[in-house]
Length: 83
Image (spheres, rainbow, N blue to C red):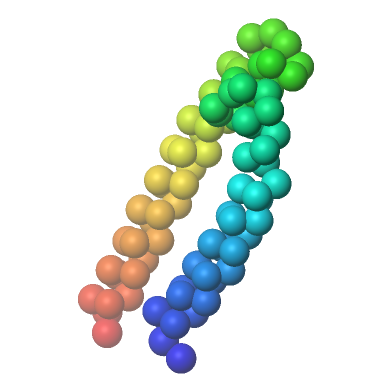
């Protein structure tokens, strides 16, 4: 089994879970009249603090994933060169 077949299986499972989450959360967002999760959290809990916290968390997660993917790709390139 190659890496592509395992990735295909993982992506198909991820798509299933995304559809399930969308089926659960879209009616809630439509009923409250918001378009994004930060808007929903601000409307539900009030205040600006939760929105700022979520923005900072999103930025940190974005940077972390970019760094980890670049490290992973460097390892893949290094392993391919060694062979």
